[in-house]
Image (cartoon, rainbow, N blue to C red):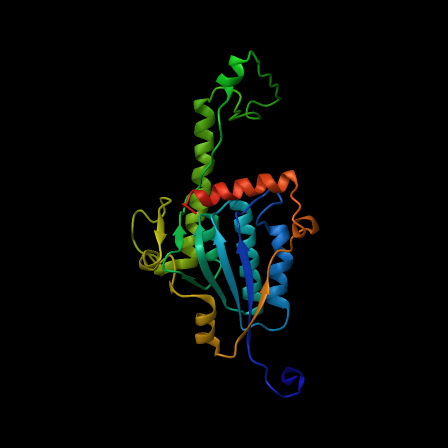
Length: 264
């Protein structure tokens, strides 16, 4: 009841936002539309001493990564609230993009960070369908309308164009990391090649600020009486009762594949 008595100062609290899973533009996993109300509530409900991000993310959509991180920064600046990121298993690629939205980033001794790069993966099935006597027919208006068709042989011109897109995205990612981490970054030439760093190595390279876990670090900053309010994405009614739709199953497979790239 102490917190309701006038003129009695309540202990500080930290709003904790969990960012678990791959970043997706498909409505599954982490995306800006579903996280927007979660992040807004974390910053606006009460007056948190800080917002802490619990991150366990192997990456995903660069656009969704940018939108989520930008929302965190806008609210942090508006509310003048410090943001801390705490990495669990991994904050790689887009996951590291999210971590850079924080003012300080902490990891476990076994956490993986970095993977500052861009990837595009697909498949080629033109020989397989040819073996079954299937002919692919595509008609377009505009010479650039159809490219990288998995059912047609790969064209050097398409690969060149895709590589150009990836290079542009990579440059944007690098500029964002440099803007957020600044002089903390080492001069390691491999820093932006997609290399992954574990625990203290990430600290040494300036990708993160230290080894530390959420509760101890927050108590050190805001006192032993600091409280925590947790915010996260709400699961659908079907998911809560254990029902799995086909889309959820596909999303789960995609997410497991994303984590598997890091041996997780």
